Image (cartoon, rainbow, N blue to C red):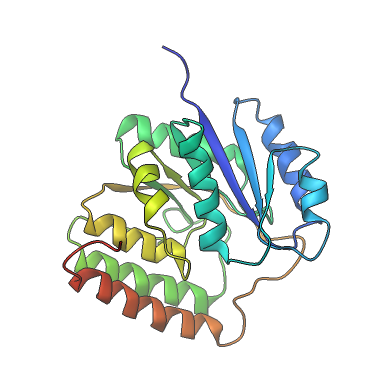
Length: 236
């Protein structure tokens, strides 16, 4: 049996300082992973640098991470990939950890497998405000969707199988995509799994969620999750 085809989707916005090293690190894993970099309207040299190492899409304007990831998901479906794995372009998600998501899927197939920061104690941890927000979002998901047992709903490292790819090609949120896409998938009855992974601090650039933004983010996400639960049908 041939090995499954795995596409790594890398959404980027102004990541010229990190993207080359990340793509070289992926190549160094020697796992046969294929990549697609989605440059989300960067104002720096992200596209020029990434395109030297990987197929790269340049979006004409900034769509946000949801639009960038959905672009990669559409590429995965169009090219017949068995799995796609989303990781950030800033280097916070070590490519060596991808094998853990694939192994978790082999043991217990789930349409979505999340790389969780919170299933072990020695992983990189964000600020307490972000951790509190993530815990509140996880509690809400797990309370509203009985099949859910998520600890890290905002993780940007996740695996999707063909079933999830087919769904997200048509239905993928542009705002707060990680937790809201989970709510939509759980609404559809998809299995969601988790595996502990190591993460690391970014070395270049800055996060867009700073100051009081994590609190605003959390409150808006909680509202969207409740809305997803009470909707009679999935988003169309």
